Image (tube, rainbow, N blue to C red; front, side, top):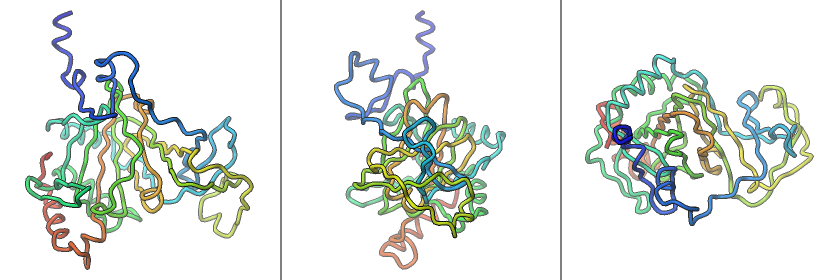
Length: 302
């Protein structure tokens, strides 16, 4: 038994949780019922359909057969091959992973940022990793990703043994730009979207046609549901690339629930600069320097 305990990976005996964030490791260490409450599950679940761009009521739910448009999501399946996936993860695993919140591990390639004070430092930032050069080049071949030049890459490692998850959140919009791009590796999962805005979502009969076939067809809303009671599930196959823009990027929070991590998952998120750091922006020169460093592809985790 002692020998077996000695072989327990360090990552399964320690966690990086702080405050109200928890994972299976610290929950077991603390024992008893946790003194905090998890956010209540949303009442109504809708499933995002990439063929139509609509969120459709889950089967056997009160809103089965009903739907609403869910713009700002692009899903590219099989963005990398199985061989490329295995090689990418192998190269990531050569570098150390840092313990992070809620049972995750992470590797950061980007400037050090204080989002609250809106300040950043480039010291220690040497660029994106060399193995991402081809990934970034390939992104630019797809409509909607033309001119995408990331200045930050964040690798997140999830596993069920740690109870990995990430709470609902919106990514920063001061530094990071319009397109949020994530590559899902090793296992499928579900990205859960929620919105705390007041008011209701108007529902129509779920469409079966592709979006372009609906342009000239107006479907009159017949039902509604409170926005705060809705969760939209976006299924993410392994090796798929997800792009969030518009409302999906800026208005709907995204999360990964613990129950949706059934095997090791690595998520690689790429972020571009906001207009403030682009041509004509107030911090254009700093933006140019960040791009120069990032796209040298000489980086190591910071």
